[in-house]
Image (cartoon, rainbow, N blue to C red):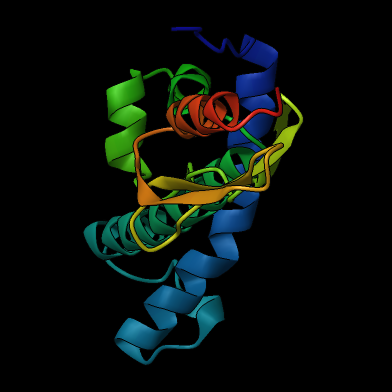
Length: 170
């Protein structure tokens, strides 16, 4: 796994930016909880103020998790694997799959055309079953097809290729 490092200067700048962003949120949370005006947030028992700040950090944490999940899904939509997502987050591939189970989608059906022995076959993924199927026309004019059930595109191509070989024009 790749570890992402942050310099002390970057950490200080990040902390300052987060605190600046948190202050209005903490004040609003405290105002809603107490009914006091926002400008009076700091006029309370220190423990109450600290708990208001903690509550605001919890809200920030939830939002960061939501934004991180969105970033993971975006990376997955561009082809990132769970291994890559895990490396970026500093966790294992399995950890990334557990954290963002929907981030990496199955590849979209990519029908392909196979031309062998003078015939053609079209390969397609069956969305309903998740398997692959093929339809073919041999060089001798025979047609054939396989219902979904092949586990991979390569397996479907092998079966379609065997059909085309058996129906070549001699």
